[in-house]
Image (cartoon, rainbow, N blue to C red; front, side, top):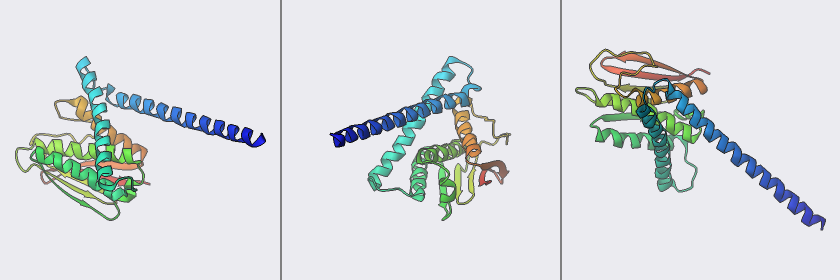
Length: 217
């Protein structure tokens, strides 16, 4: 009888733990959604902006799930190392770049995982997709030499050509027509850099816009 009572008590404890974890994850998801909406709230001017912003949030989640599906297709349920994850993200963006007639070249160094280990899988996907997305979109607007060059190691360097016009090196600004959509990506990158103790710098170099990200601690 005592054994049965012990089993029932243990099952109850396990149920309570599972319920708590599920509620905690749900709260986290809600907080993340609220945070994402706050990132773009200052850029929203009309109801159409709000609709586009909500679409972008949904689109972000779809892209994360797409990368995960591609990984499962290649590796099944095996553990995917950070470098393999990064390669899949870059290949996904390379396919997209080709559709936009942008040449994307990349090199992933042996120490790239040092920065990636600061992120969860979903955070890595969101961070690098937005980082490369912005570069590809900017390069697609260039009159010629539509090009993105990625060098990812202990330091992340993203170079892209851009439309021949005066640009701002203020990381909080965007010259794109749809400031809601593009500003969302910039906001995600800046927030992750702040949370993961990374510095981010924007410079110009011989016709390229250069984004450099380093570990600060």
